[in-house]
Length: 155
Image: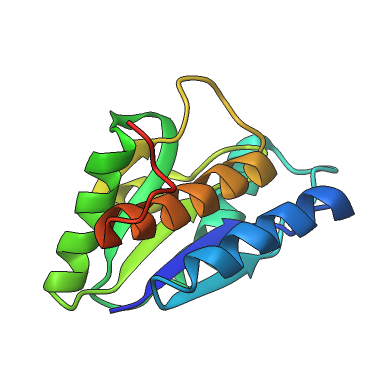
């Protein structure tokens, strides 16, 4: 079982990139974690639908075959950190890869949404994809501490 975070683009701000890297490194202590970054579609001369489609195709080709795919979207299921950790732990028990997908500035294509096993909400509002990646990385770290019964997560 491995966790794959498939995300559109790289963090542009070096400070934000450093914090993302910190939490992804922390999460990797608990889960075999792989981050794959799909190239962003150019916003110039391309409709939002075309950008979503191009980015979606790039994301889909990076997902492991047979993975349990969790799409991160503000319209998804709202779960607590404890519930989130249970989802990840259950996949580990099934020895199934889990892929988390974060779209770009134009969102996710219908093809990516159709591939989803489940859609999760990281926040009830729209997040820039860089911040969504940070929130997801922190929650993966938190999930690891919850599963191991470590004191990071306080109720």
